[in-house]
Amino acid sequence: MLGHSTSGIVAATLWLLIAFSVLSWTLIVMKGWLQFRLSRQNSAFLEAFWNTADLAAGERVARTSEGPLAQVGRTGFDTLRELGWNGTGRPQNSGDIQPVLERRLRADAQKAMRRLESGLMVLASVGSTAPFVGLFGTVWGIMHALQGISESGSAGLDVVAGPIGEALIATAVGIATAIPAVIAYNYGLRRVNLYGAELEAFADDFLHHVLKPDLGTR
Image 1 (cartoon, one colour):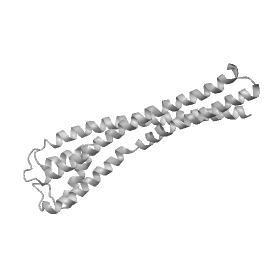
Image 2 (cartoon, one colour; image 1 turned 180 degrees about the horizontal axis):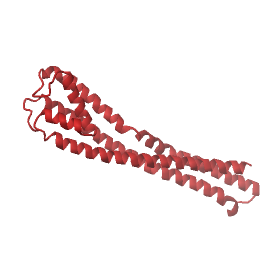
Image 3 (spheres, one colour; image 1 turned 90 degrees about the vertical axis):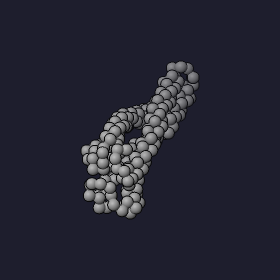
Image 4 (cartoon, rainbow, N blue to C red; image 1 turned 30 degrees about the vertical axis):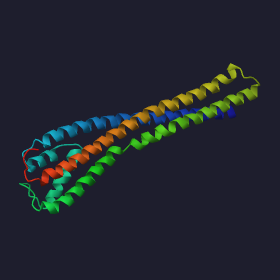
């Protein structure tokens, strides 16, 4: 009876690890596609935005583009509109506009960062817990082997092969689940940090572009 229970526990452990693996790979594919798409959107927006002749043209580009940088740009132009900018020329009272605009741009950049970070903690959790879940299955497999030896009075291969095999499989699956999750988390975190730096840099450039006397091409 205990043997069946132990095998069931090891099987449940393996199914849990498989579920972790499916979840990890789903997130890896989704985040990889998202990062690829956002990189293209940001590159296209920056090229179009900084080649505009004035703020009005820049606003049109921001409102017709996609991606985090375009969203930051839209927030900037929305703020300018709220502060009285009429869509032409240079905003008046730039000294009063600067602190409000800077605060809004920073807040929107942080919001975009939080969206980009979503899912990374799941990968981190899988990467840190999967080896221990596999180890749990390993321990139960070894206990199963010891029980078999105790009941049969023999340590023959036919007695221990099955339980030891279960233990080794649990260990291998745990490691195989953790490695891609850890690699994807580290890579994803690096990409998020790069996106964060890009968002901050664009917020600064946008602020200076709006408030500088010459509003020609950057």
